[in-house]
Image (cartoon, rainbow, N blue to C red):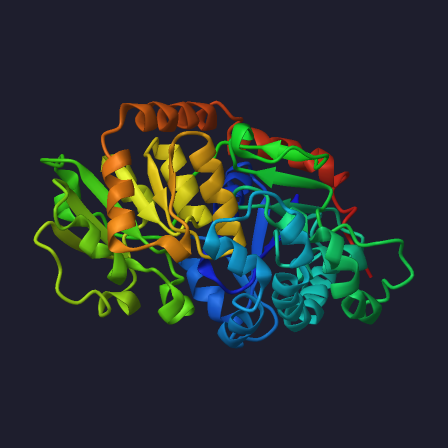
Length: 400
């Protein structure tokens, strides 16, 4: 079977495709990952073949326009997103970002599908060029999500947001484009996931946060409690509105723990003078670090949250965007951590949350229970074994 996987250019999105791609290759299937040109090197560093589609463009001004102007972002900042009525009202704003990305990618992706002839297409949940190309070519498509299913809430706005895309591909006469795919690869423990009618293929999460080298200090057991602090790759995106690593470090000055700041080189320069108990680790994949940690403090991004769940580590989250709020609230509701609203995030409030969660038997027990639930899900090899049946007879994905 031939499987084409596709994502847009941010590493945190195509990282989620890497484990299922590995599983498919291990099962003997042929895989190819289609991404914008700037993401090709990241894919190949992960050991996968890549094809460039579309063009690179600066998405940050678009995010600034659509996300920070969104009522969804404002409610996320205030920590008031208790249900999805407000999210649906604001849903067209984040979807506009993904629609622009799809416009840049879709023509090249359709051409690649027609030439490479995959039997199945697996797409990042908000890389809408994927289901568009699959629909245009008659190829079965599977959606890969990255946590609590944020993207499923956007589907009600997809027909209008993607109307021009569909028309350009001759799809305007169809009843509708199913941006959820024929099934959804779901790495989220079921107890944290929303209840709906989506066909979910639950799978044990295999954390992949990029390639990296294990530092010598990480090979030795920590001499005291260890806290991971990370803001993923978004700190430079959010600018002054972010309560990032540089602003949170003061919360740990009096905490009896070793603090490891997992940052990108771009964010290292922002840290300034560090407290004596703080160590900086640049480009260290979280899955290498978290097994030695007692707590993680993050923005509630899907990669950080899922990696912590797998490692059984309690969490303190300061969410910035709507999807961060979903992840963070799920962790807090499960008793495995706390959510600090963005507009209430200060050194004092974050420090107080850290002291409440660090070493708390209640939070540790809840985090351990989530890790057990996650480990009990089917392996990716088991899930991959069922995908040929979903794709149908080999060669059925051919399109003219």
